[in-house]
Image (cartoon, rainbow, N blue to C red; front, side, top):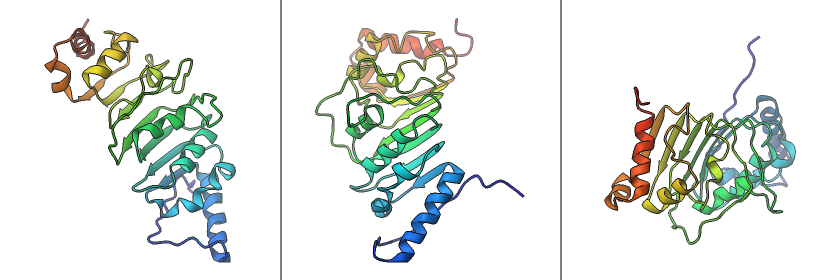
Length: 233
């Protein structure tokens, strides 16, 4: 008999009512299936209320795919990711705002979280409130085994937190890169040529802003990109 590997559940305009026994039966069934399969995919926050218990009930997840289109559900999905940090292999997440990504790296008690098996991190935001301040996480080593990193908005931190430890494994990098972010990441050696021996693909947005200033960091970024070109030495 084939082994069940993935389950998709879609509920439109579903209203969660704890007084309805069928709701609890449904939650029990879905939670048990997720425990067996190891993959969770949420597309709409209409299910955010029913996610509250998931961090306590679902362990050893390998994959989480979450898309938030309105307020609600972010804290629960971050709790779920942290709870499953030892086993999580891929995380595709669209959050409300840029600052929410910090919840992956740091727990509410201030301790740092590490994802030793995570090879794919794709993060986007559906709102663009801008960055009022950038956070730093000295000593954090959240993603030491990343192979694919895609950040669909301005880099949210003022240090190299996301890049620490994954230089030997990173194969794909996609991100926006302002001149300020480029200067900061160059300071930490992220864009040192030949620093990522397995890197095969780099996609950088906002290149016009970066090179308009003709800074030393822009030149270093260009050398970094050229260093992974075929035949580069």
